[in-house]
Image: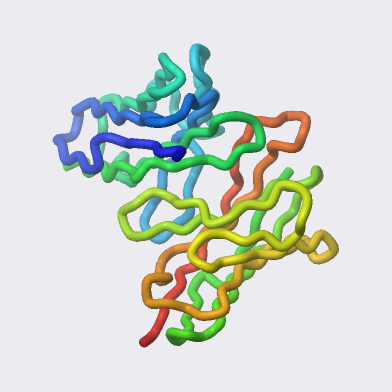
Length: 115
Length: 117
């Protein structure tokens, strides 16, 4: 149980393109979803916390207009990297929780490469 | 504020040897603690968690961890390493018990476990 699906697994695109990443909880309803960014050989950096039906809460230093998060249902959250540039290249990972105090369940990540 | 420190960014053991990955935390509220494993180009998989109750928790793949409040530690162990255990391991603390209760995880820097044949 508690499967989180993230799509696509890899994206390669030109600079200036907007890229949408989907995060779905397949067998449970997620009250909260989280979006992380991970640089090579480093830990996960939390970008934002997303609650269904409300605006995402962004961490300090994360550009809201750059990284658009939508959490329209209890099973789907999307992250859109707008006008992506090479410095946005990274590994993006989402996670979902069923409720307070419950462990986060992670998707398999999206490798974003901007040329 | 909460924080996690993983001592040793890289640990190397021989196959069959004891695995010990160290994690110390700082938390102003009773912590919820987690260990996750990450294989290359994948997300994180939960190994085990401590919330309340028994301080020795058992997880998947033969791993276990002991919560020691007096030492603010949550070290991960496995009696006998397998080649398949080679991966990145992350210790994390959650604020789920606190009044703010955002459920956010604070991760340690990660420890790369290498298993030699």
